[in-house]
Length: 300
Image (tube, rainbow, N blue to C red; front, side):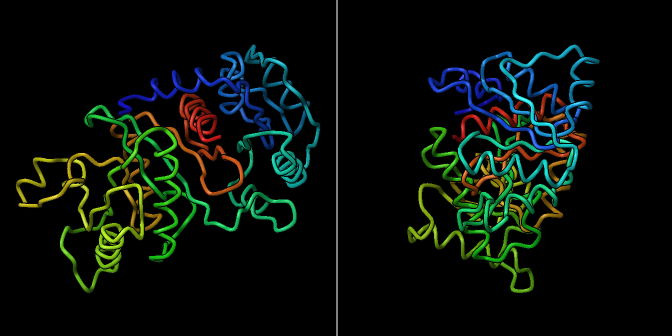
């Protein structure tokens, strides 16, 4: 059981295939460069900086940053820099793609390019892993950044992406809470109907390698006492590994509430592509970007 993101760092550093090559798309981004250089010095990655070389070098010099065995590809144009970075990963010249000083839609346009993108024919989804002081282990949240209002079919794919990753980390049967505003099925609330279907599909082995329960409200998903108070009998309630969001708005609010109010530590990665993608918010700290690199290293 992972109780801290520091444990993830220990696992990542124990890999025998380090360093992993990471390409930073549109590389002149301060916090991203901080995180990449830190990961480089620890031997986790070998960075490839694609972007304005002048601006990238200026930031490195100003911050006194050092990257081990770094490569530089000078391409000041944002769209062209994204294309070059994505194609390097596609051609297996790098193992990890990371977002730099570029808007998410621009990066994803490159990732989803039909000719040279990283699409595998599966749904891409965002996975965030939180270390929250008030919770007894790491808790994951999906999807807060890519899928706006996922259908039942898309929720299945989102769960499968996250469960596959957690299985890869050694969590054999992660407990998945499908969130709604209430914990009872309500025909007027689609999230509760989807949750009930997902739970039954899991019971019938249509969704495997996890335990799913829902609908669960947030309080009984993370608090055994709350579930007990409401007479909810569940193997998931109070011991959730993964929270499935009903839509992007709920997910985004929860993500930022945990970071800014609960002061949670977070790492995030995009799953479902042919290579892991470090896709963090512009407001995320250098620590969050570094921890996200750890997630990507462990995904490969």
